[in-house]
Image (cartoon, rainbow, N blue to C red; front, side, top):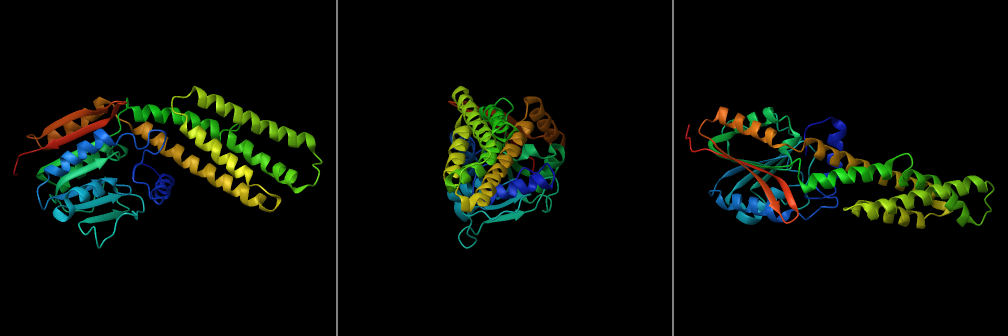
Length: 325
């Protein structure tokens, strides 16, 4: 989980990971960044010595431990930590014996002894921490010859650009004049119209219907103008399906379902806002490199931009050392 924040953030991420998703990027760009990032991790995993101990930070539902287990099986051991409450659906202790999950753990206060790990890794998680404190912990729990391998959100990446666009979509959906509020207001009038009982307050009913139609038209216009309209299309379809099922006997349940969907959108908005806010500029990544070199003067640090056809996806940060201490 992305660890910097209050209990509300922790609960939002716990609810998200309880859905079983492996990755934190699930909006319009979901599933499209596996190539370069997958290659980075497969290269790392193939180079680990048999018996290596790996620590995965902010693991979520464990995509990196799963990938490493698929590559190496029980030849390496993986401890995976996250601040959220976790129960990855893919993880079977009897099968994945070398993979252990540790929920409720902050990157800034790791519950491991010094010099335990041969590799400390994180995918789209480390950048959400108090970076100097978390990096100091990474260096404390890693052996002098360990590898530190991080994939972090890049402030100029396609993922962040999509995130900014989707934040505007969330505002359209959740605002005072947005689709969700208009749909909630029209539910009782739809139920009454389907009851067969004549509507007495026709003016109010018509006004609610017009607000809903205006919100739908505004959403359609925004989707037509957006390079990543998926969220808007999905939300429009979800609301339409819900309203199609409204009946006089289920008005309250329909309203509760709509509020629940609005809550899911708010959680997604929070996660996207955090991603955009915590994406790193090169200067911030260079500060991390300087901290590593100050602690381990012989460390070799490599900073790269992970790219594929769509553009920059992330920073990669790899620090290695040959010092035996």
